[in-house]
Length: 229
Image (tube, rainbow, N blue to C red; front, side, top):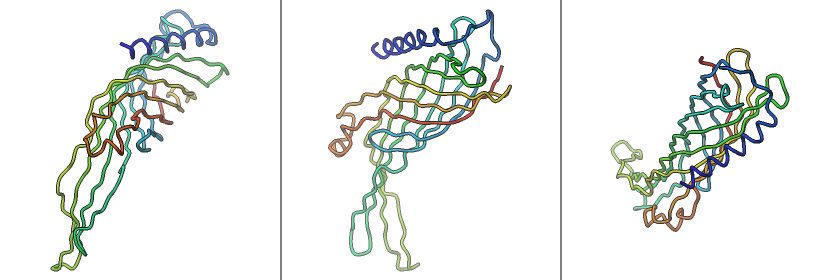
């Protein structure tokens, strides 16, 4: 309920700002009203930084609410390895532990758009709710010396699941879109996620090292939006 209330507050505040700054909109449907886009960039939370990807479908409601657009999106942040530890077994062999994290999410956003500079530059601000699928796993391998081929080999010994939760949260977003004629826009966007997890969500062996870290990412992306209809 708090997430819903916060999202409503963001949209109402955005509307008040945009309504004062936005141009006068014509009555009736303003085309195009359906857009598809994809963007990529840099994402970071208190655990790790990585590559942020997001694809979205946006629908314009500007015929009914000045400057307002609704968006459904799916995103993923590729963090890579969080940690890598090597433990010697003997003089030649060792156990390797590689810990990685992942974050997939689905989001519903509302944002208000304006043209404070006129022309082909659109500024937008908004926010909404999101569902995040968070995970952290440690892959265990053994690296050993093979006398037959005179080289090292690695074998998988299993996976330890440190964290696996579905978490709801909210986000705020702001950005600039540059019109590309009738094709669409080039987008520059800043997005911040707010997520809350619990220390006990982590496997006990990982709580001391990672339990107090915040999963909420901030991402800076660029990409393209294409006019569909």
